[in-house]
Image (tube, rainbow, N blue to C red; front, side, top):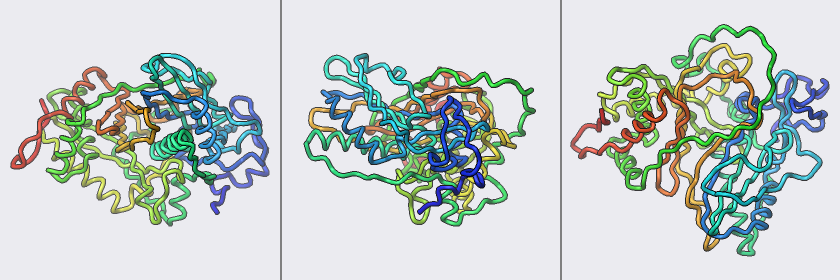
Length: 450
């Protein structure tokens, strides 16, 4: 059994535990463990990630409610809480003695994505379900899970199990599920697998000197919740298939090709006609790379970070850039650099960081999203990822120059974009890079549009 105190400060059960930032008190018996650095990154703002789907066909609200209740019982971490001490450290707390918050359903426009009807509060619960019912048997179903306890792979697993529960209950054939133990962070798995911290993190070439601290001032406290719905570029199945074909033709991964395209798009926007120095960071899910592997819902945040830097000139070959990205990642995986990168997170994130990652390009590719099971007559027509900050505060961490989020659902590649030097132009450049024609096999590579 995991040592639940592995990330707790020495003797924390003997020290007085402090009020939560929102005024909630807890005692030693409530504490599961201190959150690890990979999880702490999402505590300050109360960051939830949402999986939101558009649904065609009548959904049964009481059955949705029952399916969500089943999910909460099967994965009790979802009804846990996060408490914050006076130093800003987050603790995973056992569920409150009151019952969990059930789903909230309301009438509205399912084509819109608005703040959930219920206020999301990490001090109360770590997962919520929001349902908007529209005319003509159209609806939107959004599940929010706190990022501190679930990354992309974990969230997709939970969402899939939710739709399994719903479908089985509609068919009057419910199946037993769980309960499952509390998931653990990558730091814990690294310790269990004997992964030690290296002298270097792997992203030194992306880092910058930490700027001088601003004069100490009063924290203005948490703000109102904020929902972020990134602008999305959605390719059709044919354009998506062309990217897969190109990756096979030139023996590079789809991920490397997408990363190359996004870096070229950024370079074309930031400095058209010249070579632009870029530094990017992207997460690598290590579940399948550990021995033994880790199940999707057994880990909270299981990604190490990989880095790549280059001077990107859009006149150069996109495939050659993708090959360089692949070579760097392969080398960093073979050397174990990515696997131990999480052990350096305290140096780059949070109050005690000694390096800055400001200005990097953040790229996340969560891969192919499975088709979720639904009953006859109910179809999921769209899927997207959104973010909700339950109690945003002044940021203390590195700020990315732009964030790209890629995933494929129903054979359509989606690239969501947050920020950037010229968002409208950047959107156009990403589209141009990812839809450039594929040359015949005799051609050494494909160059993107100028």
